[in-house]
Amino acid sequence: MQALVVYCHPVEASFCASLRDAAVRGLERAGHDVSVVDLTKDGFNPVMSRNEWEQYIATEDIVPQSLEPYVVQLQAAQIVVFVYPTWWGGLPALLKGWIERTMLPGVAFKLNGKKKVRPALTQVRHIVVISTFGSPWMYVKFVNDNGRRILVRAMRLATSWRTRTHRFGLYAMDKATQDDREKFIRSVENKLARI
Image 1: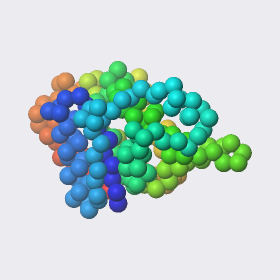
Image 2: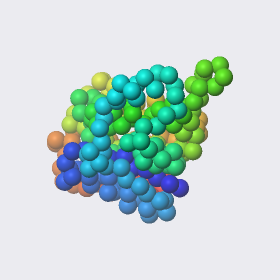
Image 3: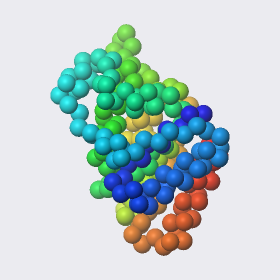
């Protein structure tokens, strides 16, 4: 299968970069073709322009030229993996902007003759969310983990009803030992090798 890893962290030497690499290794071990989108390295602009917004509202199936490479990768992917840190209970702005700008009419969804939303990313079979949290699990549960909800619930509505979701989280990251971190990296790699 074709896998797309969407990576978002401003520091290349971060723990999230190790998780990205573990995800790629696991997917390649499983025999998948893997592409990586590094939003920081790409200098991705997360801000939707007025023109883009007007096209979105008009439900015009127009993909801005700057987004075409991302849309092509997304439309080819059968596995989509997101690797990011959770900040303030949600997605980093760069990743949220990528979602808002690429999940376009004709890309993520279509409107049928009765103006009902129908999924357009029906080739996606797996959505994988890998994140780190500064807070412990109970706190994250209390504040609802909105970033994960967007990716696991809302994005899933743009895919097939058979799409499976997988979630991996390292909680209380600031208190995690080196052993905890290495164990989590191994777990991510090994589980993705079984997808």
